[in-house]
Image 1 (cartoon, rainbow, N blue to C red):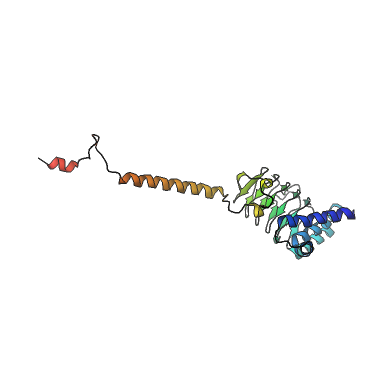
Image 2 (image 1 turned 180 degrees about the vertical axis):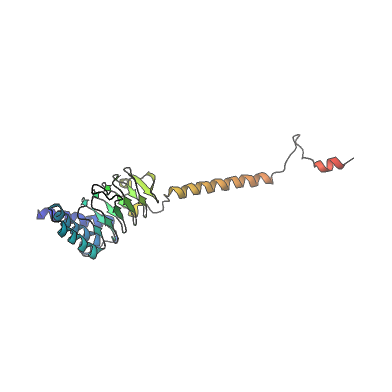
Amino acid sequence: MAAGMFKRLREDVQAVFDRDPAARSRLEVFLCYPGLHALLMHRLAHALWCRGWRLAARIVSQFSRFVTGIEIHPGARIGRRFFIDHGMGVVIGETTEIGDDVTLYQGVTLGGVSSNTGKRHPTIEDGVVIGAGAAVLGPFRVGRGARIGSNAVVLREVPPGATVVGVPARQVGPRPVTEERPSCFPAYGTTPGDSVDPVARAIERLHQRVSELERRLAAGDREEPESPAGGKESDPIRCAGGS
């Protein structure tokens, strides 16, 4: 049991190195990363919760919240190599299920929108990246390898490998995390230089179209009008007054 616990701890520390270039040493990660501290305390709280020690589990989770600024309900199920970067303000609800190799940034909410006691929080599948300030609300799935951009509000299921942004969140294309270069981890759910907001793209296309039409109209006004016979069009007023 102890060997398995230390193996999981080594995996958690390595996950930080794989996804955060600011990490310098394993000792630094162990001492200075609140996401790791919150995860370790959640495992204790979850073990107590599953054994029926509900009050003790809540006390541990609230102490973790006080120390790290990260609130994870002890009933939440979390997979391996889970990484919360920065962490402050993260909230993970009771019936949340999180797969392996998932990354969350500060301010993320995995919440519910129902008052029933059943499943009311999202299921996050393997390899998902959720950017800072995003809210995933409801009992639906976020598919394997999906990305959720910063400050997005997700209210319905996200297909595997998709990228969603905006309020409410809209899909902007199949962009699996696994297809990126290993040296280019998609931090905050986006790739540097990308303009992925579909509304912004639509407005940009409309602007380009209007500019093109204005250019054509300006070019037409500059052309000299000609008569049907090929000569210049005569002035009707001068023709009527001439002898």
